[in-house]
Amino acid sequence: MQFLTWLLGRGFGRERQRSIPVHESTRPAPGLLEARAAAEVRARRLLLRLLDPAQRLEFERYGYFAVRVPGRGKFWILPSRVFNVLHSATGHSYCGTPQTEIPLSDLMLAQKLLLENNPELFFAVANHRLELVPGSTPEHSLPERVMRARRSPSRTRTRWSEVSMIPQVNRPR
Image 1 (tube, rainbow, N blue to C red):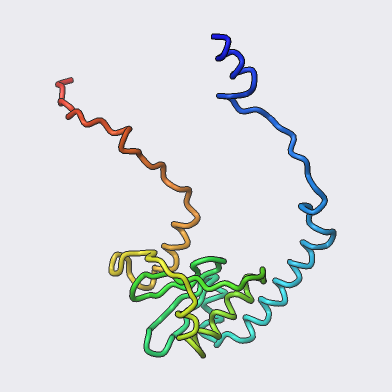
Image 2: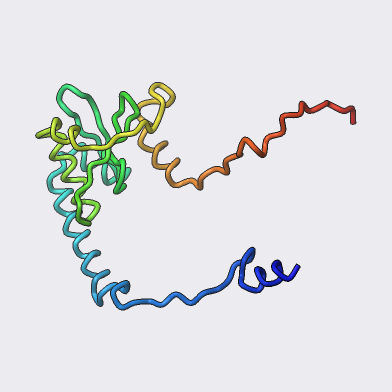
């Protein structure tokens, strides 16, 4: 009993508020957020200039655009930093990001240019994962479905230890 009292007094089993020191190095430098916002504005202008008219219309309407890759088909470039290149035929998402932080519009433009001009290099370095089962969603709604799924809160998972192995008996009410 004394041990339990000692443990609870130390904060075990309950949340304890701690003051975490904030070091100067963790605070953003003055003007850093403004500089990043200005860089994104410039990057977006450049992206819009280099998109063809159909891509520009699609980007302004939905926030993403399609790129045709010779010999591989249609890919959508989504407004995300990871796994933002979605293949329409297979449902695979690809992720090829630089080692330094760049504006999102610059990332989307770099991926567009790489896919259109040197897709072998893009696919050689990109990570990929299956985002959707092929054929489960109409092709035109794939990007919206992926973005909606990423925005939704994650579902609670049930552990096997929480599932009863005893069959339920239907009782009359």
